[in-house]
Image 1 (cartoon, rainbow, N blue to C red):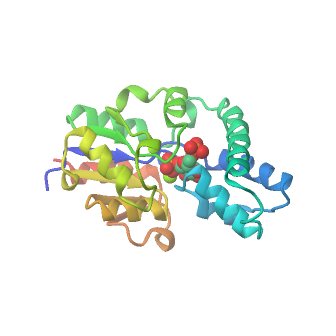
Image 2: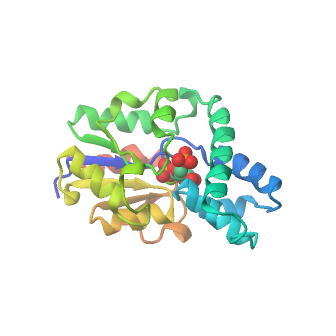
Length: 218
Ligand code: B16
Ligand code: MG
């Protein structure tokens, strides 16, 4: 297959903002009497803000405790906290070999897109000084269903002017890998085999990404 585009997830692939999401959700959880730990935080990766809140409420047996408006307020308060934590981000927070991979793709005229569930993605890319690499950043609010539905990856390919089969998707979450597979792109999972066993290719960290991409392109 001749690949013409690579579509990146953000959190866990380009930078590790999961720790900040965790801090902000944990703080909110404490305020409403629900304790979450790092293990539970794993299942929030790749999942939208409101869906994450729902999962937390279910964990605390409080899913029927709040109406929609109150849930939106809770999610808003978590996000305000999270955004203050993002202030700490600098280009040194870009994960290993990501810049090298992006440069390699540019040099080889491969289109680059972003399919992140995060509404804060443009801010994060700005803080990391990476925004100019991306031809397309899909607004997750514009796609009907979040990951594991393939919608965001399909929309990204469409906006890049490519067929899904011409694209490679890169993800760190189980929901994200399922979304890539469902879209008929080639999936590269970054993380552990136990979590990402559905991925077409799995690499333990972004350290191996440039080399993996080189074997697929050219
Ligand atoms: P926000 P990704 C996802 O980013 C995170 O993994 C997930 O934990 C978060 O809830 C989601 O973005 C929404 O983020 O609250 O900033 O809109 O992995 O899809 O890049
Ligand atoms: Mg992710």
